[in-house]
Length: 179
Image (cartoon, rainbow, N blue to C red; front, side, top):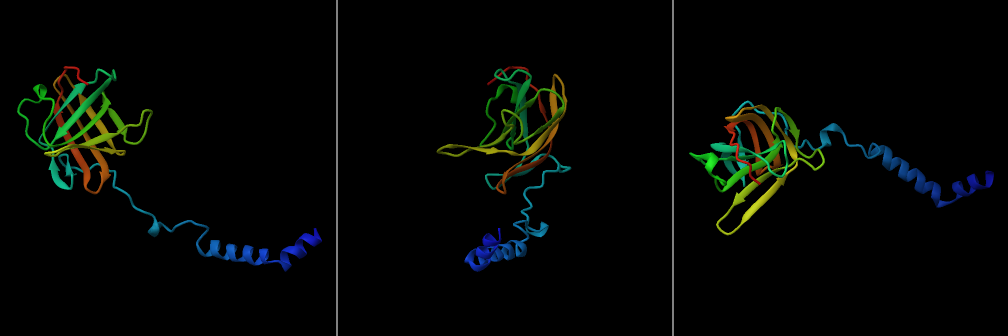
């Protein structure tokens, strides 16, 4: 044991160990201070109608629809749009910028990025030449009530700073099953 200690002391290994220890101590062993931690999106519900930005442009809910899912019994698909649709139960698409997701067909909260399969929402953007689907895995959706006529809830859905919505919504519930 004495020979090992002597070897460590006489070799460059000790200098390396001391240098690494000093670096780790000065950096706080790799832990960042709270001021250096990234803040991330605010995932608390805003007290407002569902609104935000989609495709970096202002977005505010104007219409939407909830329909039972044929592929996922007990689930419903939500389509939320910033364009006015006068007969949402007879329309499959609402506009060029929609927020789409599936949630349980009952009151409760769904957390994006959780579950198996993972709960997500989609920012659907239709351009003149293509369709873009941006998948959001940060946020939450709370359904407060589901009746034969309508669905009410609130959502905060974050993909990035150019695609984020937050607030409350009430949309028609259409009993036709689609997928």
